[in-house]
Length: 548
Image 1 (cartoon, rainbow, N blue to C red):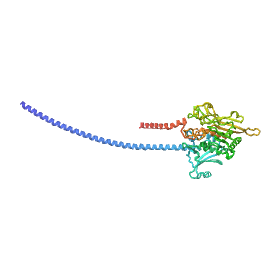
Image 2 (image 1 turned 90 degrees about the vertical axis):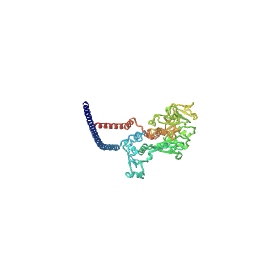
Image 3 (image 1 turned 60 degrees about the vertical axis):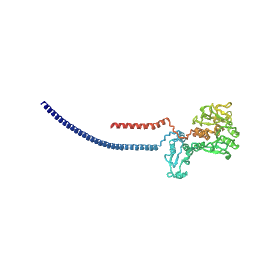
Image 4 (image 1 turned 45 degrees about the vertical axis):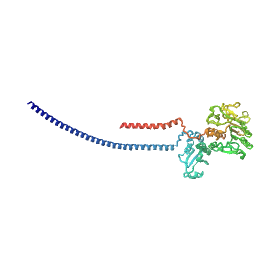
């Protein structure tokens, strides 16, 4: 009985276990199906989300492109407007400056693009109408712009550009008729002077540099057509190795820029010094004057003629009795064989005892010249008979002297830089003015005194074409432009044209040498302005970003 009950229980348990197993499998299957459905649903949801995201990204991309297009259009329009505004301002400023005719800012060391105060001073009192016609030139030509600045100093001086069509009378009158040709006509009433473009420049044969001499030429032309008295200077020929055509070519160029007529004189041909000679220039006689030349020069002196004498140092003794007789009329003794050398390092160039920086004494000739600007090469002393000047009715004025540390070398075999025993030391006169009274003034008759003035320098190389040193390609007159000033001022003084005594414009290389104020302005424009523009741009950008 017990065994049967156990079997029944066992069967019921097995049946129950089977039912539980079936239900368990059914539950498991249902659960699996449910998970698969959930997974499928999530996958579908994921795909849908991806499609939505892709659609959104595409939409945003299109929106960005459109925004960029709109921004580019707006910024491009603004940029174009800004460019047009800048161009309009630039053109307006240029037009305004032309209308106002303002003097340009000139930062070159030599002030090549603006008139010097000296030129303005020389033309300011002209009371005649002067016209400068630039035939065949355009309004933006640099020389024409320079010429227009004369009007600032004197309203009677007018410069303008003309052509064959607008002024056929001018081109026909002055022979500027060929198409494409040009010329500058300086006209004052019936007097005129014609310059060509080549007249306004010169050339350095050593550096092949083109040098502008426009201001000197234009000022000279203006003065020459308005003045009633143009001095005449003659250079004595036949007795020297220093002539305008040979060894003094640079000087001849500078002389062309002065208010003088320059010519050469061969006394053997003329028999006399011409009556129209205001100044006779004698350069380093290497042979004695002929008796005819001596007589003609003495007659010229007795008429009240003036002389500029340049005498280079002598290395060998020369017999020049007629030359010395002329010099003796002014109390000048014969030149000695020898050369002045310097031992003061501050009064020499490149530590060379033979390149002397002399002292300029106070005089009308030297007052506008830089005190340490003159360079003498192998100067020699001028021997003046101080005790005999009164008897000769001569008054001496020293113009140029050497330092107390200089000495006079007579032994050229001595290569020492120091003075040798017996060589004279001290300050020497190397430039002097000697005024000789030929006839005293007569109060009863009202006759004026007749005087003859000799300006003499114990140097000739300082305005020659000889190289400054053995290793240099430049002449002393190129190295120191004050050398030419000393000579040209001497000529102006002797010709009684003290208004032409000045320190002239250097016409060498154009270099930037702004003043401290000008340099500050330029630096601000170059560096500060761009930085300010960048900072303003960053500030504007940041403000716009914050507003968004």
